Image (cartoon, rainbow, N blue to C red):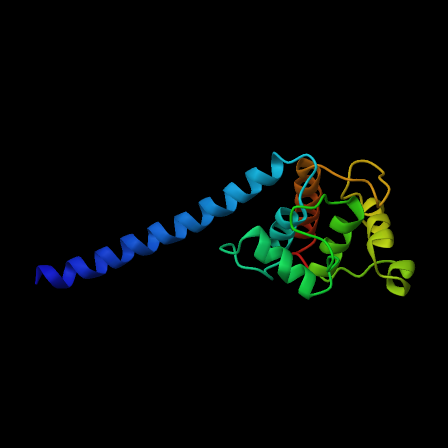
Length: 157
């Protein structure tokens, strides 16, 4: 009798423990990105791809980076530890969430016009050139503003 009640309780306990660990791991990765100046491509890919539901929270920044490279969102010749530019973050955000851009972005999709779209939609506080290297704080802020505006409009695309 005791064995029957103890087994489900232990199962629930370990399930709750596993889920709480996954959330802690995600928070740790975001904290790492916030502390980076300049931001690294691997951590930015982790942030965007997990927010978009493309990558699981248990993936490493290197794994998220490889997923982004495989999907053509980041350059194949780069590394997860390379510096992130504003244009790369913008393009990663636009393509990961399937955000339709303006006319020029639809004709020439890439970091240049993705960054213009992010600025136009006011997801970034300041105007920045697409080649400007950004901090982890800036990357998290841009993604956060996008997610908040998408939620206010009825959900992320």
